[in-house]
Image 1 (cartoon, rainbow over the protein chains, first blue to last red):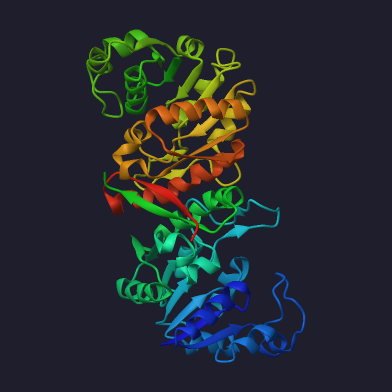
Image 2 (image 1 turned 120 degrees about the horizontal axis):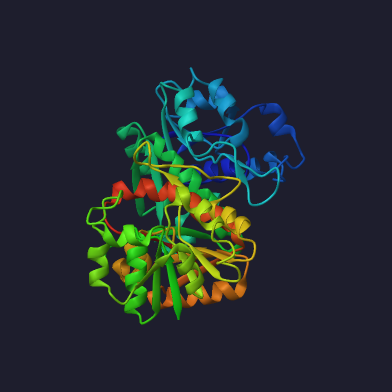
Length: 226
Length: 226
């Protein structure tokens, strides 16, 4: 499958590496290709230079954001949440008809940890992205766990925990579910339309309180029945 | 132990009945005793008349809100969330030095289901109550599950799921933990000070999306380790 990953930060790299390892034809998209490839300094988030990572993952294609948006049948949004919406709006025509997997959280860490939310309660980032890209099939998922668990759920409890799906298009959710299963997800719960993004995005307020207390990789499992 | 329950709605009744069954000396508090006892109609939330319930649970004392606040060593806030803060402010002197267990959620169902939140993100109902009652030890807990599961966690997965504690006073949390264990809770996680109420209150946005999808009693279990 042709899959693109928008964003060359830590999360984008984890996704691109994993998808390439699984045998997919992967392109990672960046705002400025030559700057990204030439830089020999850590990025603003403290990640090693992209070129160092790319040397270890030569199979991953590198393209501009519009090239990456046009390349994949499925496009994964791993852009920084704060600027994701404006970046995606600029890619609207490239993303027409595509499945966009949104894994971002509208969390503001500018005042430290725990974060606050810049979209919350009566709206969500998933919904805003869907409204901005009406001809794209937005599927919100995987935002409820850290990047390493997203692509390797076996890191926690042999994978015995849940991931959620939100989106308006049933076929798109089925396609994304296939990727989740490739990653190793056993428990996938479809919450409904894209408005259910509010639930998974606001859960992150609890995640942010569990994170320092548990101090180890974790996720939630939904328990039902007697 | 002398325990009071503020509020004669469905949640207050479940708590009072369970605590009396466990052998505690329980008083349930209401705004207007004679009106509550005399009414032979369903309450505004559709619960059967209080007198019907009380006939089945005669060991539970009935008092005014100030009487109940003064009676218990531990006082459980099961008032309607919308009016809880103002009602508790009026009980400030009665609640001085007491442990107040806050199980409420700042959810507004006036536009139907799913609810929105009238306190969210940078504040929480738990924090507002603690600020309003500076000499009371507020412990937020149990708000993340429905009332029947709160007092009987075995209803789900033989009790193999989590409940959380938030509060500024370690001794108060230890006392409340004892009540949770009496109810049957096996997994109790102390999240930290009362600001962590934001996490458990905002989680309810996910709860409200899981509720119609699962359509059965449920709760989350925190999974850690390989």
